[in-house]
Image (cartoon, rainbow over all chains, first blue to last red; front, side, top):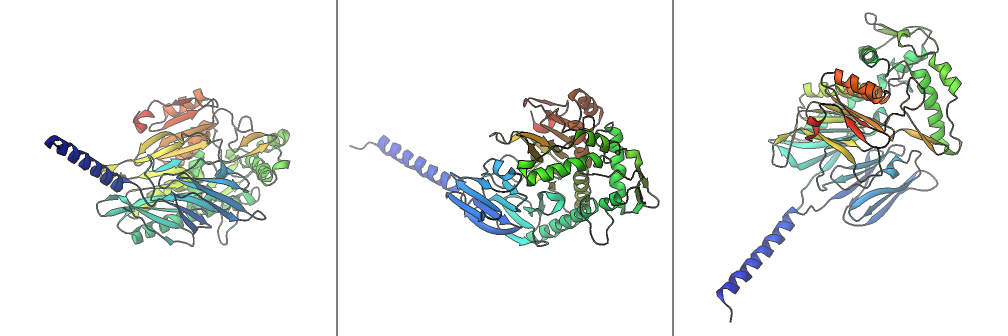
Length: 122
Length: 353
């Protein structure tokens, strides 16, 4: 026998669940992208939420390896002379970027989750 | 739901512009442009404008102005029809060189900073710095054969670093280096100075809220709009000199109309026999300064912040602290080699500590 209170409980649970689904749907940051540029021109755009490895150039000349993994991006390998890009920490917040100056390569997050800072002094 | 943003527009061949809808103000949206060509580093322009076209006009103007300064302040390259700092160096001991007022102003400012910092930032230090530069370049290109400059040679070069041998004639708009073996190196001051001038220029042109960063030399003006559309200061992080740390920013500063410049051991360096040698050379020891991992300076003028960050890097803490406390509107953060930190008395007000 279903009592009135059971119905209220079931209804409440449903509403809460629906609210949760709506909340997640509307606040989830979708469509974060990894934009790779070479010499100032967009070379490739990749989704941040899909693991991928992108190799720019080849080992005979200049090369950089960009890795998207677990919602973060790193420059895992490069034969540039200063290795600043390879030593850079993984990025995932909006507008964060990794720059390889010697090879004129940039990797930037677009439409990503907002971080705390607008820009870094370094 | 896509919190959309478009990318577009290439300026001067190589300027990427993007926009962010989520942080819009009344009638204005936030945009960002970046480029790699100037001052041998990465530059970013952030600002609010009514449309992408409007912002593109602003960022193009910023680019063009910065390019003018970059060419005038260059010590390595010649440009057709321009007398720049390299031209002054090439004519050391030969003749005065007629130059643009922008160079006269930069060098006069450099003299002021030399006075203020007791010689710890010296544009006439080129003879020593160029020796380090050559060894660093060779070492980066051929790491197996990286070498240090010979100390005796450094000492010999250091005899040609007297800033009083730089003769500025404001009326004739000329600069003459009367010691034929000296040279100017404006690397510790030129970027910050250019960012300051261009920030003032672009505000006059009508961009009221924005930021310009050239190689992490950040100048803010006006404010940004937060997610609720409220006007708040810009948030500028201070790079952790330990680049392998998960804590990317040491402090987040909230700045409006102020500059933040950090000088550190982690950006330009080379390795000799497994040891790192960075690019900030102590005028006392003629070797990379050993007191700190990084120095950050907050003050209004970006040129002053740039010059002071190098000067304070080259001083023991006590001396730097005394200097900073004696300068109105200047705050500093010292990061010591063991990663401990100290900051000046008014620093906290910028980070809401």
